[in-house]
Length: 155
Image (cartoon, rainbow, N blue to C red; front, side):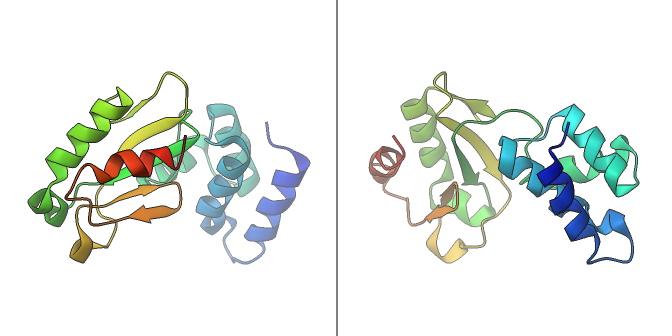
């Protein structure tokens, strides 16, 4: 179910486009911003508002890797797994994160504080390896001991 405020925000975004379906990503972002992720029920309600099927909107949601279709932790860590990051120490960085958090890729810590996800590229190859925690970009992490200080910022 969507709140009236969410519906109003989605309608506002739809007004910017000739085809209301063009506002699908913005609609998903509106729902996710309020709930942290997009449930099946919320997706179905948003799809109805946009004039598309739930399956069509789900295909948008699952293609766009910044939309979460299941609950995530308070802080989502997106670990860049680009070629540049692999060359500069991706494996060591991933292992350190997994060791410190006690989770694997795609998992959330037991206290729901962190979710660790891979992302194809963060666009900062000249400062690889890199990761994003929420909206904060952390670069030049070839010295994996820096990970401890980064994680402490989000405790």
